[in-house]
Structures are given as C-alpha cells and as structure tokens.
Image 1 (cartoon, rainbow, N blue to C red):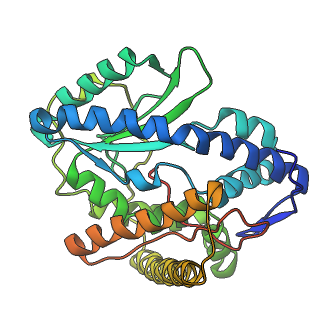
Image 2: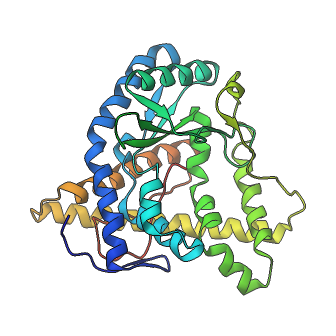
Length: 321
C-alpha cells in the first residue's frame, strides 16, 4: 500500500496523487474480497437454478473497474464537494452481482436469495433496498449487503432476463444522463439540460415497454419511482439524444476492441498480468461477453474501456446500476 500514486485524469475529472491513493487502496480491498464473494453467489445461483430459473449475469466483471471508481470519486468531489475518503468508505458496489429469475418465479427467487445471504452472515444495508419495477426508465430491484462481522459489502441487483437485456441496452443513455454530456449539449444548443434528460428518459422507457413485471414483486424493498416521463419533449431533442447514444455506443465498442487487442498483444509478448491488473482485464473480457449476448438479442452493441490500474485514463465503461 506504500506504492507512490500519480495524478489521475479521466472524462474531464482529476484526482490528486493522494486522492488517487485513497481510491486505489479501497478498490484493492474489494479485489481481495472478490473470490469468496463470487463463490458465495455461485452457490446461491446453483441452488435456485432448477427451482426458480436463476442465472448469474456478468460474474467475470463482479469487480467494478478501477477507473469507473476513480471517475465517481472525482465527480463526487468536484461536483458535490464530497471528500474522496467519504466516497471510498460509503461505496457499496465495488463488488457487484446480478441475479435474474424468470418472471413467474422472480419473487420467490429473490426471497430465497435473501434467506441464503442472511444464513451467510449478511444483512441489507439500511435504505438500500430499492424496488423500481414501477419506474419508467429502470426496472428491477437494487440492494446492497454488508457482513455483520466485517466491512465486506456488495451490491446485488435482481432482474428478469428481459429487464436485464433492456438495462444493458440502455447503458449509453445512462452514461449520457449521468455524465457531462447533457451540460455540454445544453450550453452548445442553449437548451435547458432537463429537456435532453427527459428525451433520454423517453428512449430508455422504449426498451422496457414489453418487459413483464413479476407478480408479487411489490412486497420486496422500498417502492421507488425516479423519473416521470414527459411525452411533450420535442422530437428534435429525442433525435439528438438518439444520435449521441449511437455515437457513444460506437466509441465504447471501439475502445473495448482496442483494449482487447492490446491485451492480446501483451499476452503474446509474454507479459504477466496479475493482481489488480488481472482483475480489470477480466472485467473487460466479461463485459464483451455480456455485450455479445445483448447483440444477439437486439443487435445493439456496448462495452467498457478498462485499464490495468493506470495513473491516467481518458474514459470508462458500465456498471450494472
């Protein structure tokens, strides 16, 4: 942990060397906990596969990539004045998992998962159980868990196969909505930022229209509706956001392909990636695999950009939030 850190930059944000050290050390602790958490979640999935049709999605990127965490910490500090130490302490999704259940067995599957996690010594973090099945732009249940005898914690999302596919397809719209792109478009076009956000909401909602809401899901977690659709958004605003989504999707795919090629060349040259570098490389491979599944279903690609613990980075890719 005494490794000297350099300043980090990415997506217009900056972390000082000391801030980068705090963030990186927190990420490394999550990397250490990953193996045992993966094994636990595999066990739960295997137990519920036959009875509830469960599937563990994206296990290979169960560790959030380090640059994504750096970007979040930097954004919290620059936009909201939240010290990186606080972000590092409070973050719940460095280790993160997604279980899907078929709609008709979804509620039973979620409840059984709760039982198994409690048997393993975990409890939901207060106020973390968000049920957004009635939300127009994101449907599912998001929870965070912490071990009662340690600081280990992780995020667990519950989806159906269709809601998971819609979420993955909406990734670029999510990135646009949470990043600085809306501010840039607002300044450039002299249009209120909220107009473009509402346009992004309409586009995200399109992909959830045929997603079946599981019966009984309303008994789980806190019901939360985060967005209200505005059908009066100007068509030209919707079209602009659609174009920005396509552009970002192409950029993400190109970055992922470049990273995969760089890794292939490194392996051919006999370079050994281990520790944090290996974990982030696994994240890249897994996200490419997940995107291949989404492409097969809807023919719309996405993928992240992941660097093996760089001092600097220019961009990043998804989290399952």
